[in-house]
Image (tube, rainbow, N blue to C red; front, side, top):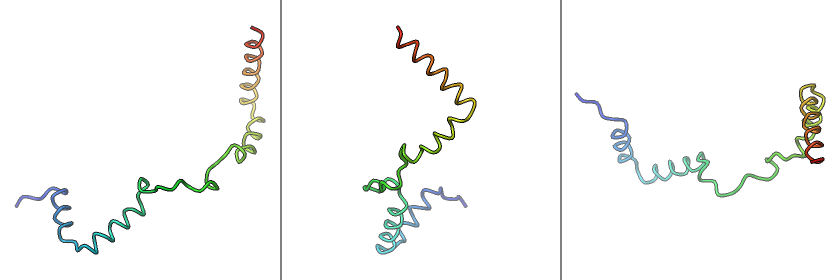
Length: 82
């Protein structure tokens, strides 16, 4: 006996569903689909620079970051002189 492909099997399973079951599946799929969301996420959930300020302050004390910032500032000063 030849086995059916998953696509053919899925299509046959969909044909057996009642309209109510199909409607319920559509509702569930819409709820889990990121593409179906027309509303942007609430502003409170977005990160902003103000929430990253404590992290930026902590990073300024890391030696490698200090060295990079110092080198960057020196390059900026040289570029302004030219």
